[in-house]
Image (cartoon, rainbow, N blue to C red; front, top):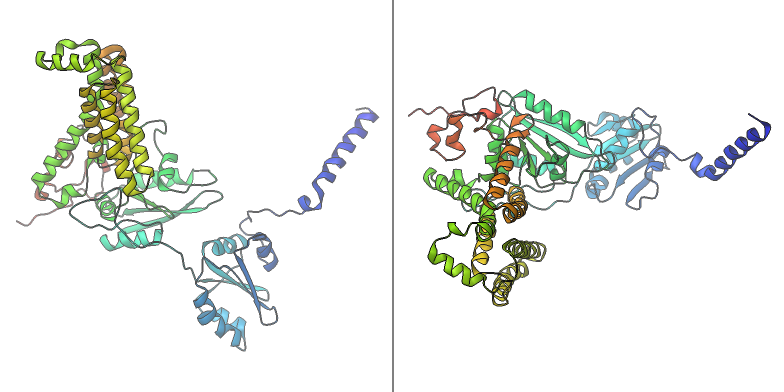
Length: 501
């Protein structure tokens, strides 16, 4: 290297160091390493420029208290816990002897404790943590997305400990195990994995824990985000974890041998492994007579067929297969479509898009206004479209029936998946008629056959073929006949019911 090149490299290095300045050179790591030496100044520096951070000093600045005002119970801290320490002749001895003051020597654990709602107390060279957590949360209310007629009406909240208490109240067993994990490099959200020992297969428990630990992401705010990070097939349109806001549903999943997860800050819990047919089951099925529950299940599967195929079948028949229509109905259909200038595929896509716009508008607006928009908008737009010659009466009936049938499916995530699939089937039916519709349905079945939920078959109990489980999947037999847990969960204890009469 020549002399000029050496001088140039030295100049560039010095120039970069000068640009950094002393502030950047001395900047501390915002994420303290575990095992780092704990000092008062280090903790204060960690929460620099935090307006909600409280730092108070007592006893001629020998005792310092650090906390976040909105996370702790300040009245309890200042009225019950601090006065004995401040009036004691030997504060250090009192702090050491009292069990509520826990010594801490690690910077990372101290920072995490303060962020979780604890208070840090520094006395001279010693540090202690005290639990004065007072989180703000809403009261237990009824679920708005999973309403039922008969049965309990409690729903989860955004507070994990409240949700755990709701589950513990229903599963009062020492075999119910809870494992605490953390996700999110920045948010550090708490995730709790629950299972019943001696019932749940340990393979599924370990798999769920492994997948959660393998997540490397800055932030996860909700359970529905979490399960997308641990799916078997993340690009699939179908959910591979069952989510619910109902504690009674989660309790039944635990007893049946499934793994459950709840997340702090989310009112939704998940369970796995899950099969495709679980998304069509509701708590109502078990709180009513078995015959009514069976009839309701049949109705939901009929609604599935209607919402997926009815509009696509209309497009297929009116485009290619007029011979399938009865003669009397054919005359009515011909007269209805005589003023429509568009081919059936464009006509159907237009109306389906309009229905989805009304649905989204009704969901985002306040409840009373949303209901008015949905009802009035549907009637006015439908009637105006027919009179303007943009669509036929029969298509309006088909689209409305498909929309109504989608609401019968109790799980919103699964209902939304089929609403999206409906557009694909309409396009295939518009180009290739019944052949395109058949290929579309076949592709859906093949795709479902290849899906798994934490390694378990998604189409169980059809594939693999387990006819015994059909009594609680396609029908709801009396409880006396449901003596075994589902085969899919591979439970260690397969028997869940022993009738004495």
